Length: 390
Picture 1 (cartoon, rainbow, N blue to C red):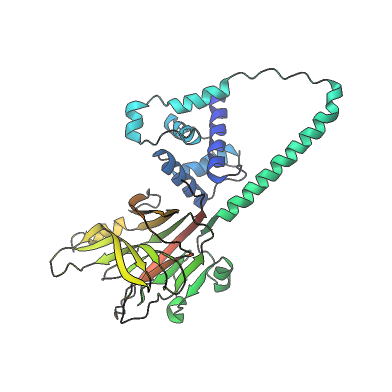
Picture 2: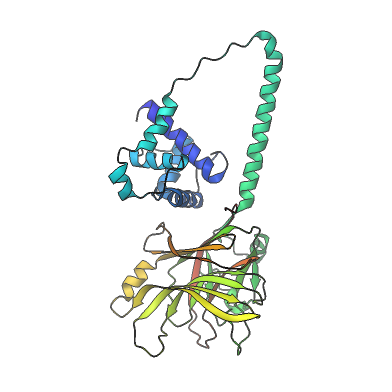
């Protein structure tokens, strides 16, 4: 890589990092930050840069001891430039057909190669105010960066559940509702990460049963517009109503409106014989006043049979769910894959009249008396407060 290309790569990487995290690059990326960075680039451009590559690039850019020499491809450099320059959304096929010459990378690189103007002459008498002004500017910039860093830290909450001490969970903003002491004590059976179980309970309105979800982990929402995401490992439901996912609520008593997305099992077809399904389900409830629930999405992921059970297990090695809210517009996404960093796909989008105050992660089996409780290993949760967009 030429000196100009190397300088341009470092420049565009730092610019992309600052756009994503609203702060300057100070330390090599963690795995969580790398995944978040990769997802942001994909959401904005339609193009993929692997989280591991981004992590390695950050170490190289900061000249970290032991960092290996990096020589990213022109396609990768073009993707970073597209992200920084707010290029139109695309994909690899479209870029190959129409923009295989990587115009955004060479546009960005050419701007850096433009010779600068000569430094203006500063008379000695001017130095009396130049230096104080320079110091003031530095102080202002440092203050703004500190403010942006604090703002960024306040906007993004990430939990890998490495410390499952209950006091630590509460300190991190979690409230454990309807605690079942026997099964809650098993939360650390597969660490790192937290393990919930599909216990009896639900927030689906039912006149014969009191609403409630055992060991339901909830936290307050601080913004009207946000994104909540959960990652699960090896969760494969095997009976009706078994499911796990994200739930948004107006209150903590299930009397108000709620909406959720989950991975669940379905074997109910009104008497018709059909293959059993593992589904992505969207569900909303009007609460006690409007207690008729609505299934707003029913998306089959896999059909189940003796012949393909092993394939289902492979393809549900890693799964993820995300809810994005912008005012009354909701976007629901999912991922199911044998590899951890597989991209999220949009399941559905819908306008819903709800102003949630809480978000929770749950595992349940509905109002079924079976004791076939499945473990749900949750390895990651994130909640970001976003700016509302028109």
